[in-house]
Length: 277
Image (cartoon, rainbow, N blue to C red):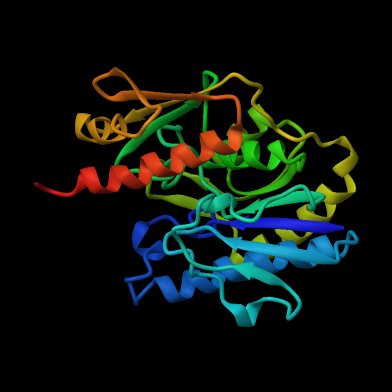
């Protein structure tokens, strides 16, 4: 059995501040980087208990150079580094039996979601595909689903799991913390979180026959609400994008990987628009 893991950091047990997730912050980041890595390892260990032999980890947070190699089993492969065409879902294809999303967070604007955002909080407020409000989990699961791969485990805070289950009711969720607003959490201990994730990973794969690939049926419409008109100004210049309103653009295509690449291009261009003139 082959397993794909996309791992983020904001949903790690105890995390409640951007400084803990910022690779340039040398006081807190190194500690929470290790906690993130150990949660990935717990998911792998649980999966191995359910018969998984081959694991690919895609580091999906910030610089995408976070997971510590010395916390991984020696036979695991890892996609490391950013500017990847499929970003947090790089490397997924039809050869995998299932996917895990560890350390994930709620979409931007979701009540009770610590550090909630959707890919690029500096330029993007909301993302809709075929009218469905998307989190990062939604967008990435749809790419996995395009290749016939179901997402079966998501770990993070309760708001993250609740939102994901509203769209993918078959998932097993490992809830490691409750959020009090945006910057405060009531978390279980890192050790307890790892034990919970390990058990949930095994359970998720035992229940794999009940899971389904998450898909958007064509024609597929991507709509992005930007934070400012300057972000929409730049996104509108991408061939195929249409300006719907001051802060909304749309892109349509029948192929979801094309939709996903267009989205990655749009949010990366949004960074440029965020720069001061």
